Length: 359
Image: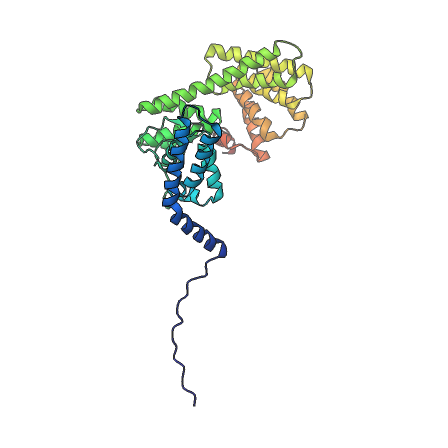
């Protein structure tokens, strides 16, 4: 009968170190050993470089030669002073040191140490978020990370909140939002209780207005001399319509802007009679200006071009309402209801107007 073997635990062995990491460790240890003598040699060589520089007849070769050798000797010490990610660069770090400090004897190493202090600086946490460069905030409060159970909020909800810092960040975030969505929020933020929020909102609001007006002036200048290209006529008309649509025009200027847009679109339509983009914008401008016959003609043109009822019928509903033709309004709404393509914005009015007929 064989004796039972005891289940002796297998001694735990550390995982083998990869050859690359082992070589890096050995190299790092060698650098640590060489740090102190290399640093002393670097100081002596830099002293000799400075002495040669201050001599009555300095030699450029001697000064830069001692300086270059001092930098090579200082690499191990400087490598240990820099953050961990720089130590891993190996000989690339030596090139970094020499590239920074070689052109400037004496001053170069001091500049390099200053660069090292800059890398180790912690971000400032008590600086206002008005210090912004581009779309990235620098020297501001740390980025707010959502908790596991925290849901993202809309900008409108944030602007109704009580946290001034969060409201300022929300205003800054509006810079990447298209103007037609950002302007109503900026107009609300201009009346905020926090002065910094009001200032940021007013600044962005003015920038959007200046951008729109600048594009209008540029396009008008381009069209002042022939040839008057179709795309520029259409783009300028869009800019005028956009300013009215965004509520940036008074009653007087609104009529002027829409009149100018329609004038440009009529010219574009005469140049390209079959262009649907021109007629589409012409319908929108004509409706806004109250030129219902012109809008109706544009709708008929688009219908012949195969445009879908869900795009055209809401305009016909608006025309019927503006003309106070209640019978036509009811008929048009029924047509839209039967097609099953009622836009969400018209479902409420449709239920109201068609309720008596259904009853």
